[in-house]
Image 1 (cartoon, one colour):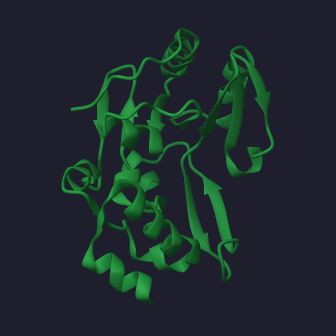
Image 2: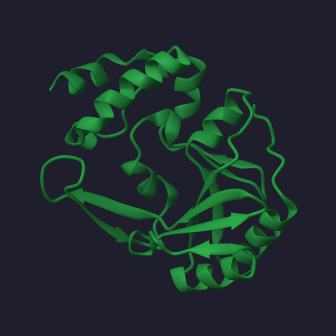
Image 3: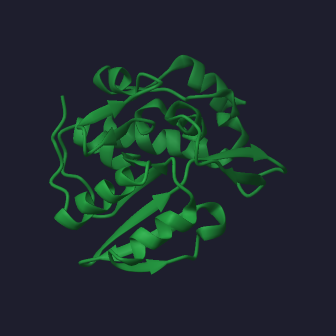
Amino acid sequence: SMHQPELPKKLIVLMQSVRDIGGQAFLVGGAVRDLLLQKNIPKDLDFEIFGIEISKLEELLLKTGKLSKVGKSFGVLKLTMDNREYDFSLPREEWKTGSGHRGFAVKTHTHIAYQIAALRRDFTINSIAYDPLYHQIQDPFNGTTDLENKILRHISSSFSEDPLRVLRAMQFSARFELRIAPETIRLCQK
């Protein structure tokens, strides 16, 4: 079970507008993990928007607050509203084009399923999504179970392509007192 977050009214209205034009807005990432851990959610929230084009999303965000389009080429729009920052991203797929953590190509897809979009996340505990309008959780990789059992587990074998993820594994393990799954440790050792 999780805390139902108190989201600003304007944000709920924005999500209803997304829904009204055929889209769906999910709260994703660390905030969902923190809600499940019964912690306070961070001020800056990340949303992933499915089913609508970026131009439509941009239109809705412009009516809601101050918009920065710095990340637009990656399918990310930043909204500032009442001194809080919100990231709105479109689902995207990433694949390796070179070495290191910069060698990725990105393509946005508005009409893929959440579980496909979630494949590019690092750990199961960071791949849980929450639909604030219907209070539903999407958890394609059983991150809630891993969180309950205090296990940190990678999602896909592409995990080891990004050296920074090994560092993140250590940080998460320490911060949330999680045991790293044996198969994840094997990938980290690579």
